[in-house]
Image (cartoon, rainbow, N blue to C red):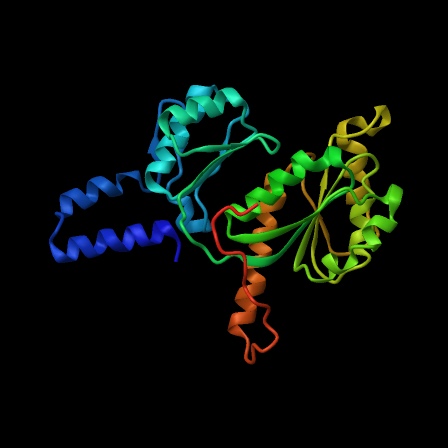
Length: 275
């Protein structure tokens, strides 16, 4: 059960027991379906519809706007975060939400109040080079915050393919693989040709002139001859991590609903936001 579902159930139980009035409950429910700020409308209902609260895109917002949005979301949700955040935005958030933390490489501001959580294994994040790691970390931490135990396999690009083949057992135990690569973006096709699980390809804006800020990698991934690849936009680690989490969650739901679960893998990785 999600944290926000628990809050709603608690509210309904309080009304039934008489500990709060119907009027008080209505006041609390005014944030459904959204809360209006002078610059935004926060979608507090999203956790019920999608299984995870609204995520703040810090890019294009002032530090004060990011802080206000994060503070309001953190009032009603145990786990919220902002993407593409600057240190200045983090400083503003921390003034209002002291337990917020900043992942500098991934540029994520995270508020995580989930004390203990059983995380689902199965998500693997792979990069072509070390320059792709910021986008990969955005994807990996996003998937972790959505309840997955994420494995990382970095700097195994096609310029030294033996590095990938030497770690092929990591590919075989994954249920969904995120491949983050710049330059010509060939790594996603290589990985997809080796596995029977979905591959989410993330082109990055890493490369030289004719790379066109990630367009070359994007087109390579879109034109892959290996079936089973989904492609997100350039540098969109967040979108890849979110999609991977949905796929991984469905995989475990299917396992739990099917007869005979002797082959179901053990769920591991307790603790919130484990790195």
